[in-house]
Image 1 (cartoon, one colour):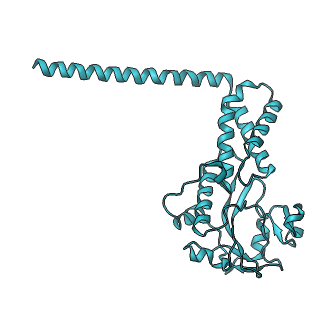
Image 2: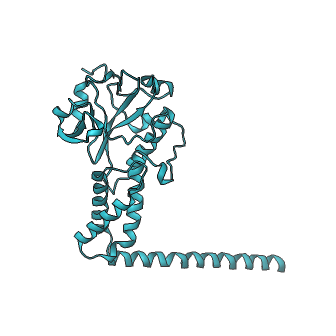
Image 3: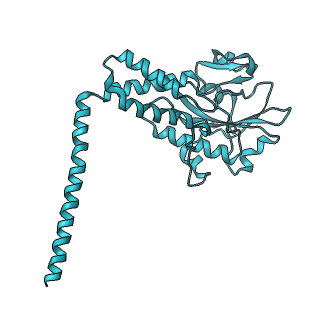
Length: 281
C-alpha cells in the first residue's frame, strides 16, 4: 500500500550505510552508522558520489510555505526550526544522480539547472552547500511529512521557466553547479596534459592536485567530492587518450579546414563561371 505522506522509513532507506552527521555545526562532522546518524540534529542524506535528494535552506519565518508561495511542487519533507520558522526542504528523486562519473555529465548538468532554478524561485539561501540538513523527525525540529512519491527530472522541470541558465562566474556558482564546473575545468585541462605523463599514479596525483587548486568556489566542495571527480577524470583520460589516438584525431582535424577551403573555392569558381556565362549570354 502506497503511503499517503513521506515517512521516516522512506528517508532512512535512502541513506548510505554511514552518514555524516552532528548535533552542533560548530563542533564538526562525524561519520556514523545510519541508525545513529538519525539521532543527530544534522545529517548528510546524500552519499559522497551521488545525489538522491535536493535540499534547500530557507532562512526566513514561514519557510514551510516557501515552495507553495513560489509555485513549486510539494517537497518530500520539511524540517522546520520551531524557534524562528526557518526550514530545510527536501525533494527525493526517483533515481540517484552521480556527481563523480566523467562519462555521465548530462544528468548532473540537468539537475544542477533544476536546483539553481528552484532555489532562485523560492528565494532559498544561495550559499547553502546542500551537504548537512536538519534531520527530519529529530526532536529538535518540527517535521512536515509531504509527498511520498519521488520526483523525476521532467516533473520538476515543468514547474520552472523554459530557460534555466547556470551562473558562469566562479564566485556565484553554488550547489551542484560547482560539480559541473569542476568537471569541465578539470577535464579540459586533463585533455591537454594527459600525454605528458606515462605513469598512472603520477598522473592521478597531478590531476588531484589540480582539482584541489580549482576548488575555489564561494562555498568549496568537500574534499571527498573533489577526490571522486579527480579519480573519474584520471581514469577516463588514461583509458581514452593515447598518443596513437591523439595522432589520429590530429589528422582528422587537419583534414577538415582543407576540405572546407576546397569546397569554398569550388563554390567561388562556380559563382564566377555563372557570372561570366550571364555576361556572355
